[in-house]
Length: 84
Picture 1 (cartoon, one colour):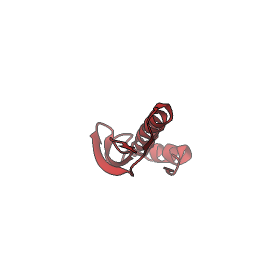
Picture 2 (tube, helix red, strand yellow; picture 1 turned 30 degrees about the vertical axis):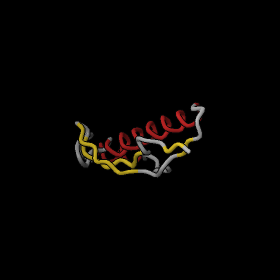
Picture 3 (cartoon, rainbow, N blue to C red; picture 1 turned 180 degrees about the horizontal axis):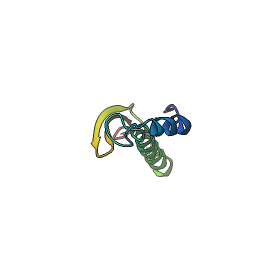
Picture 4 (cartoon, rainbow, N blue to C red; picture 1 turned 90 degrees about the horizontal axis):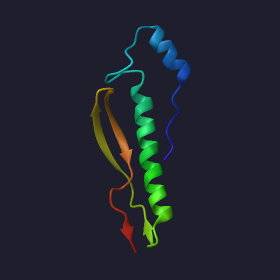
């Protein structure tokens, strides 16, 4: 799963122009989304690399996350892993 990297220079320009840090259109919302997706991906990859049973990922799902930093859609790995 590859996301566009957070652009720190653009974020700084937005902050200087008065845009909010948090909220639906906040400057940090895309970074929080990117970090959350990366953490979920790392978690499933770690699980798959350490389990002794034959498992595979079974696609992704989309979830809407509402937080104090704003609302965004996450692309998440499956909660359950298919065992073959």
